[in-house]
Image (cartoon, rainbow, N blue to C red; front, side, top):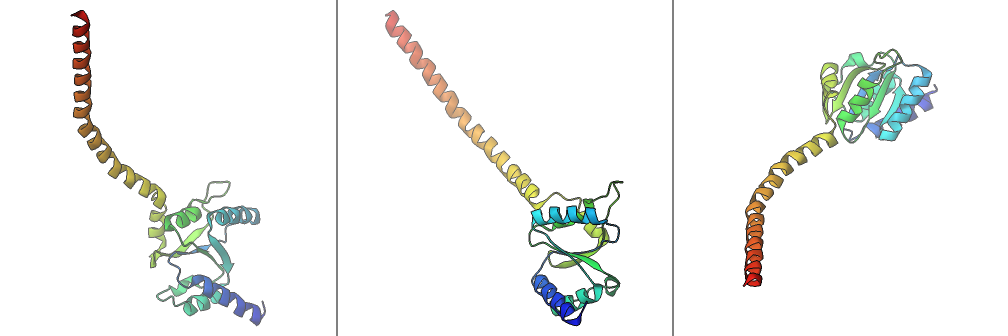
Length: 180
């Protein structure tokens, strides 16, 4: 790669990294070409940006983007970089759960920036077990809505009973008037 190309790659990656809160750095060495192509399609559908970049160029881009406290051991060979602006759990799950034909994980997560905080691999793997943000929000809505709907039902019950009793009284009076 010529120097001009390297400068352009660093510039592009710097722009992508600026302001990112969710960045995942992965070792992609176990992936085959056909698996990589299929996985990129999955990532593109989700809106996840993924690029393989030479470690030294990534280091320059991260420094230029203002990232600090990054482990120097990450910059030993080419690195897969994934960026996602939305739910970090979705990002992490895609990489941790992607497996080959033998059901072995393909990617080895090195480190990640999750909601603006650098996180080690063991914590990232724990994050992958969490439900997605949408699932958690729907559960929260259900938990809030359920007691409220039960309370409304309880409050409406006496009114319904009153209406039923009044309807029965009306029916009896009408029957009594017809009989008389």
